[in-house]
Length: 113
Image 1 (cartoon, rainbow, N blue to C red):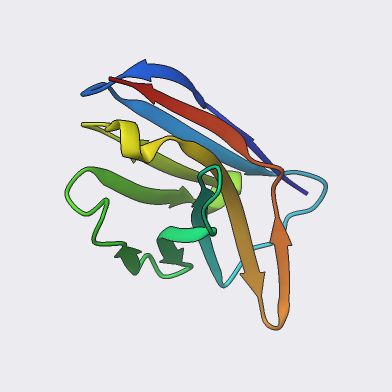
Image 2 (image 1 turned 90 degrees about the horizontal axis):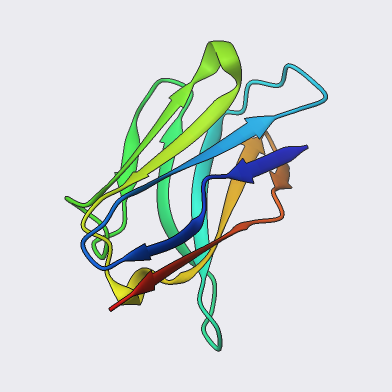
């Protein structure tokens, strides 16, 4: 089970740090990532990180968001700086292991202008 935390309401220009904890087992995912979905929009990929630490960030967040993971603690992070109202969405954690995947329920991030 993946459980996200750290969402909330923040003013534009502010920062938030999201966390995603793998509970119930000591699974080490091949790849983990953050997705987001704004009201009325399709879910989009925000960032991914492999077990080796290779990262990918979408162009829309590059330079502002940073994905990281603590394999020993089975925890995934997303540091979000310089937040913009367009970043408002439900952010969900995703884990990929072989052909199996796991999703968290999501955490709401709201950025006010």
